[in-house]
Length: 90
Image (cartoon, rainbow, N blue to C red; front, side, top):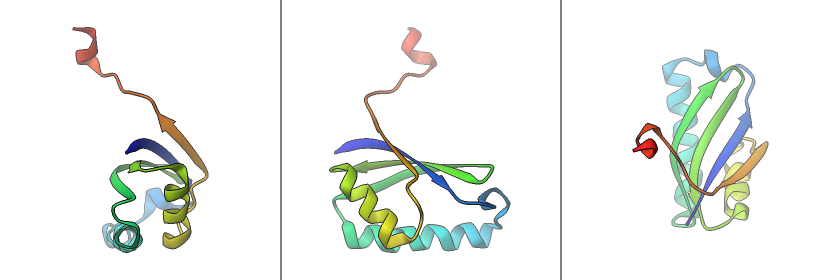
């Protein structure tokens, strides 16, 4: 599986209530269930009018199919080649 960062433009996502976010996650999970095991959601970060989502997927087409099924846009899909953090420095 490859790792992708998906940028989604979702106006007002940063002001959604906990219940609204719960509903959005449930909608995403329902789409993921239809695509399993081709795509997996790892985590998402919420910013002003955007989310940044980390997914594992067999290919970009699987990410796009999830966007279509869930109704959440995949405005930018970036294949990630690795990661670094403070421990990378040794």
